[in-house]
Image (cartoon, rainbow, N blue to C red):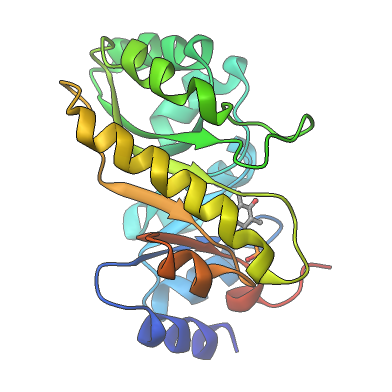
Length: 217
Ligand SMILES: *Cc1c(COP(=O)(O)O)cnc(C)c1O
């Protein structure tokens, strides 16, 4: 089942759009099944779940942190992730930089944009994104490589479109600024119900859970 769904989505995605399998609550065995069907990148929301999955899967996949990262988990996170998609403050960025320096790593990161400007959601406010990226460009062990957004929960995926558009506009602005050390390459937007619209609006990473693994119970 997982196998067939992974293959179907991979076939459907246009060239240049990468699939991140959003794996929260899934067992390491389920994740492995997805990888054996061709999934290249696993998205994890929790450091601990990622560690557990990696015991079985190891480096057969790339690992992206897509959940909110607490500063006290940065040390572990920099060891086990290939990209952190959810940077939203200079405090967290500095902590990651410090932890990476110790292990001689440069961490590719995305800035999470709170495109719906929702109080309860993490991410940087759209108006503060440019100054955060500017400030982060001075960090030697963190490399800004793009933006990520969730957008407000919407039953109708069309309702997500304005938030994807807004995030793409920030992406284009930042790209046009050519900030040294910053490479605007990835735009991570869209989930199971909204990835088609996200791709229309310029996403080149989509994070899909339910449509690969089935409903979460
Ligand atoms: C769970 C999750 C997804 C995927 O959600 P689905 O609706 O199951 O596809 C994408 N991004 C993040 C950050 C998530 O936590």
